[in-house]
Image 1 (spheres, rainbow, N blue to C red):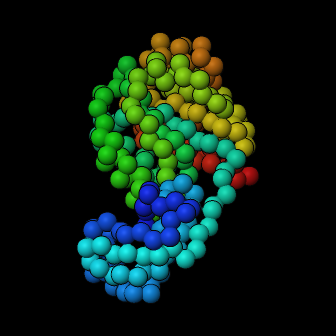
Image 2: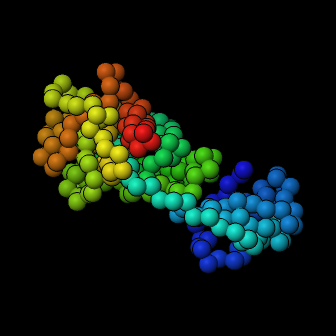
Length: 235
């Protein structure tokens, strides 16, 4: 199955047209013709089946013939991850986390951050592509980049954790996670969180955790955290 994405489709939509680029892909590459069916999601949990009515390379039109609502999960995974020095590493994290199953991503700017500017438009495209590739119907929410301090001062639901490399009293994330519970996990930059940031997070009810014995890159730590939260909820 090949999945297309169109955020403008709602449960009441009966007919719509694909953008020019996707229209060309459907007609020229996939050789879709009148009467062929395609699968589309709006990224909000809906899977639509549509039948092509006008196979035009510039404006391919289709009629919705059925829809399925994917059941909502009983938990929410929110990762706040510092941008990496190399953009492609952060993009790799976005892609793999979407495949695993993540709900919300917030880039956080920390004291040791080497990159403080991101390209949200490109990140959104990465998320959309990964969602379609993994046949998911839920597009993760990408929040605007924010400072570490502003982020931890938000009133967020669920269990809250900060994964860092300092040698102090930490527990395993896997042991602390509870199934069917919202979770927020902080992942720092290549230089790790500063001691001040760790202290501030703990004072804001974030529990310090370890992700294992190895020292992990930012993007690897984020994937491990995401997978751990997803795995605990599959048990």
